[in-house]
View 1 (tube, rainbow, N blue to C red):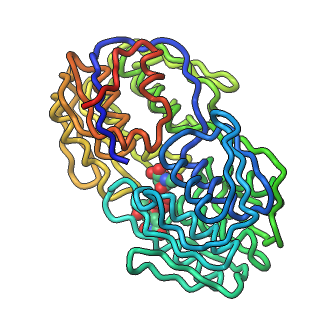
View 2 (spheres, protein in one colour):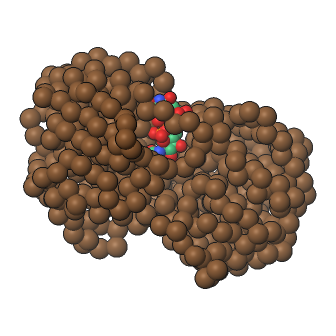
Length: 423
Ligand code: UD1
């Protein structure tokens, strides 16, 4: 969904106050797809109102599900009468997580035909591990003609070793294996909090999944999942981290509420290492107070519990104004520094060599017109604009809308001089 709006940011304000974090985008897209496996009504609370979630909900309706909006962040989904296994409507090809429909439809109807996924362009994003998992369960799998097709007469549990740690493959194969015959063991599985969240959701509906959050997940297939339950989506660690970095960047004080502080550990440690902030942690909040210019640090993105790649661009924005030379190594994706060109226009000094960015901190960034390239880069460029001198205009906001609910309003409530206007 292309938007004709842009952001106008007058930088230099310290952000101050409290912000409440929404449910996790990456968990929400898995849970909404997982509702396909459930017979009866499930209620999902704390669901972020973002484009990716809306597209998936529309798709469920198209497949024969019934979706009711019960409140701002609560929906009821009833997929008892799912009657189609082809999903290709409504911008589905613009998002990555559309491929969870393959695992969910395969699990429920033994047949899936889903338009090829899009999502952020970080270089090649193969799906060989998804294929490996589905085929091991006994399905045929093809990705040709713009569609992913998977079919099986029955799915039979087995042992699957992922050659590469993949969030998407772990979730997708979990979805397919939940209603399979017998036991599936996933080895070298991803450990992200949204994988635990999906397992909790499925278990609440009657699944038998153990070990989520570790690298070995055991899924004993059950005959059916039943609704009649209410589930609340885990808080978004990436949204939380974005605001924590915003506090450091603007030398403000932000309390990030409704979070699980343990999920923020890798960022908390790195922010402390910069010497720029003091951090207070409570049961469900973190306060970050930006005190001084950060010192440059080394950051390497890794699978959870390592430093998240989805906070890499925001961290580069922080290091762009640090003292000394920082290094950021992208450990997950081949090509996730494309947004750096936009930071250079703001006066940043960054050299990218393959998967490494070498960042020589400058004392200030200068406001400029810039274009968002992907979801998290959009957030990081906005943060840079908040810290820069002068006016920054940010274009291509459709990327931001895919994953952050009410981001601009939240920043404005924290004291940012930021407006979203027609181009
Ligand atoms: C998910 C997140 C995304 C995050 C990423 C890494 C969702 C909807 N998206 O994306 O926000 O940046 O995890 O934390 O949750 N790979 C293969 N073969 C495969 C699958 C993946 O080689 O079959 C590679 C990818 O190219 C990448 C790495 O494995 O280099 C990790 O990818 P993966 O964890 O699958 O990321 P996504 O699920 O796409």
